[in-house]
Length: 305
Image 1 (cartoon, rainbow, N blue to C red):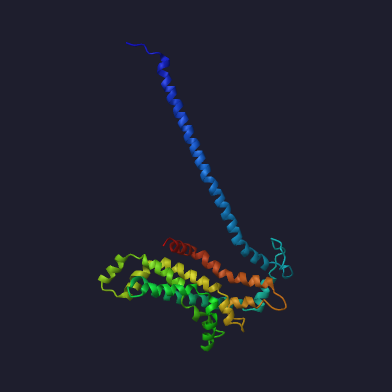
Image 2: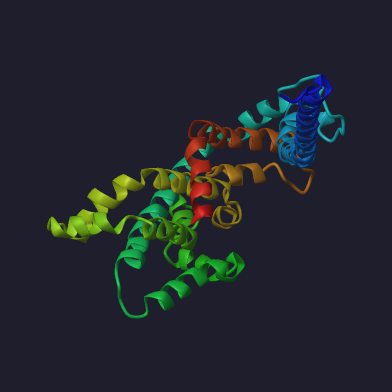
């Protein structure tokens, strides 16, 4: 039997342990380097997001800060308004019927959004579900109308509304905006991704096109319809140029026109303008707080398709 020294037996064990420790150290070094590699872009990204968020929120803060200043300090450049004053809100309340204006604007925006949503559903269903000659060319021309600037169609629309006798009425604001090419394009994208198996099954059950649209397609597209409806409502609420043209001789119909009444040749009342603008933003803020999930979902879905 051969003699084996003790050193010859323990040496491989130490070598293995040392190699294991070296391997662990190398792996930890790689993990630390990878963590540093991941953390640096993440930190930069968060800093950029914070700067963008601050730049987005600051105009809103400045609007309310100016509204709560004293009227003589409306042009002050201080960050924090002090002393706090409600004089600008009192001026708005006394000089214009702000509540009725917000109510009229709500009716106008709701009517425009509802008309655009109905037309978008019908047009998108035809473009996505039916086959007819020239469909793609017709859809291209239809979407091309979205690229035409509003200033090009402003004068013909104004002449048409004047001939219809709708100047100075809420209907005059609604009629030229009952169709939105953006809404049709968005709804077409959603309907093109709708499962064809359900459509074929509905046809086999004997349903016609109206039955398929009302009982199969629309119930399964409620999140997309809600998101699009909210976006159309906000767009109609924020529209200023066309209501200002229709109500150029009146200042008690829509809130956009009411805010304009504080701009005058004798001077602009910036405190009242900011107070009225802040009150006009509150309904949109409330709608966004309660329905923000649908708004984000609508933007995400439209971006993925």
